[in-house]
Image (cartoon, rainbow, N blue to C red; front, top):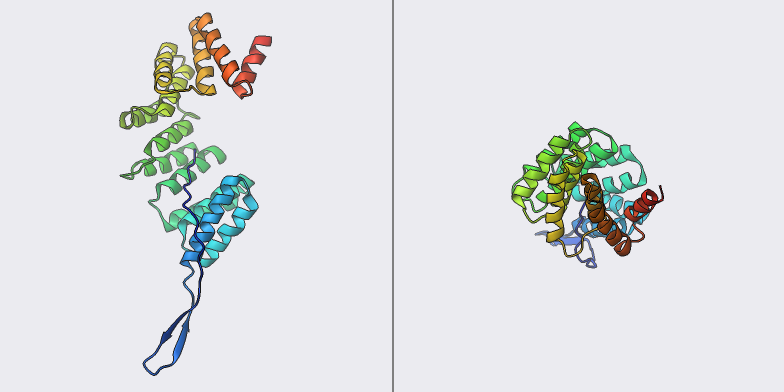
Length: 255
């Protein structure tokens, strides 16, 4: 889960700077392109969020042309290339962003996720997640623990659980982490523990998600509580009839 914050865009007018020497001669200086680069970065982010990948690529490349050391532009361009399926170019942009800003937690997170989920390099991905988590005063630490857990779960469920418990100790009210702990417990066949986490997540949520309801239904099935499982399934079918989880339930009931 990657979060990109976009500020309001302002029109920027650029003009060359003119200075006057002691002799009265005017000297024309090159324009400062920093503001233009920031504007193109913001446009690139906006296009990326809308799914207009080619337009996003063009704006981000323009931003980099105007300001080659703009780390955020390289990072978001990496996301664009990744979505376009050009993984080599994506990795090159991520690495350049890290070269320019090695302590940026968003870049560390994005590259870690890229390594883990696109390249299948779990150990390398976890190293970058750990680097991001170690940065103090980071507002996105819960997201980092969650993403690191998803990465670790590919190889080691116990390690995945450790990330989640560390995240929960810092943010006890995080519903996503609570639900993930339920999922990890279910996958470890610790069904009673899974139920505890699921029920706590539901108590914290005004409206349980389709995935949480589906997990609750599977857990009650595993515990042999068929009526409770059916109640969760019925709620899921009623609230999220077009979800993938609802489709899975329909297929299971047909069988």
